[in-house]
Length: 123
Image (cartoon, rainbow, N blue to C red):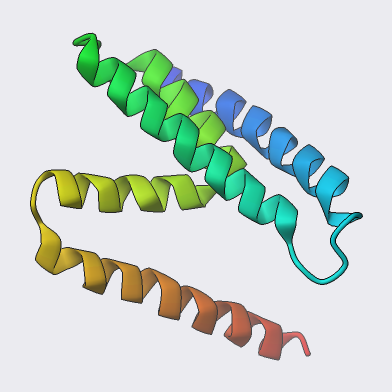
């Protein structure tokens, strides 16, 4: 890991987070009890990261600086869900089916548990 990579992720993450914030502020005011902004951000992030993977693979482009900036940075800032889904995509692509349910379960259930745990600490 080098400083250039850290800076690219840092700047991209800021951009992605700003986009997520804007989407959430715009959409959440129209949906009272459903976090539409989060869902929209997750879907957009997954779509963009899928486009990036396909474009790089199709054109033989190494996944270096620009990929890091766009995928880990912008998409990661837009939503960590895209990174989670990217991991699952690679498991499918590499035929590691046996790990998908475990990976999904750990992230989903432990994530939900720790949100609740953190909530209880400050309740």
